[in-house]
Length: 410
Image 1 (tube, rainbow, N blue to C red):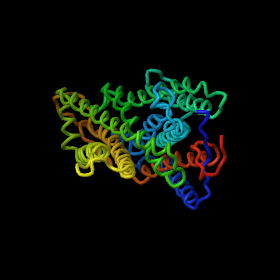
Image 2: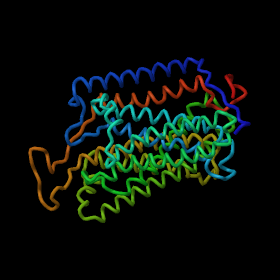
Image 3: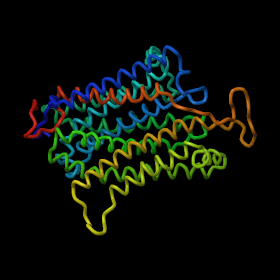
């Protein structure tokens, strides 16, 4: 890694300044929406006593899961002892991978804190722990992840510490698996919803992190095309095509097994009918959002070859990879929406085989329509993660050096 040279982002273009203003506006809009939710109460959102985690939580969980997965590039470059993984295609972009892991996690956590309604109560969660709750464990998992990745980046930046990069990388790799396990366990250990309480949630979330993180990193690389165009970037995009395809297959496979397991359990047949057929928006988002847009079409884009031309050009292959990555991100939002919102909308069977009704909406399917404030908060969290990223790129050498690019070197 010592022979690689890195540089800062020039940031002198008009597009860079426009991007700063746009991201800043989204962040401010998100903060104003969070303030409105705090001042007026959560009645201004689409949430209720039945659906207590709204679309803002979908954004938050997406960012947290993606933060773990986006560290793929750094992990591959330093953890696995194979020459193909030690190539400059991975090591050149390991720093950016670590930076995105931190900023995406911070964006997701900010959404969670502001969406809870009482951000000032965070100090209670940080000082009083119930270790029977997975939420208490996640406080340590999230903060520990940031600290470990910061140390990991320090080992990359400081040439004298480069010999410890692999040790730090192994620690970061293990911790990111624990972090995603904890996030999946939030749903897998929750017995108060028919859709959850399944151990399959843990491997599903790990697979989703690998898929979403790889897709997100591809989009970031593509967005840097006009500013950083190195041979390492082209090589990395080529290698990520196969990785992303395999991760998509893994998510699809575990999803199929999860639904088959629920169909095997007689008590979950009604829920499966609701989420796959009769649930209105939820079956639509599952079949068209997650399966078609987020899985089938991206796989065709990544692996399909024309019978006439045989092989496709590098430019077309990369273009397909970028389109497929965008579709994976869209399908990921749909998947998390179905898991989080759809799982809450379906009522818990308190007395199986019997009809239940009360003034507390027991036995009724909950309705939920997300509000502007929730979307504003969600997009504000994404904007904050990207805003921090491009500001850090402006002052610290995270990008691989190119002859045509001017900036500080290290």
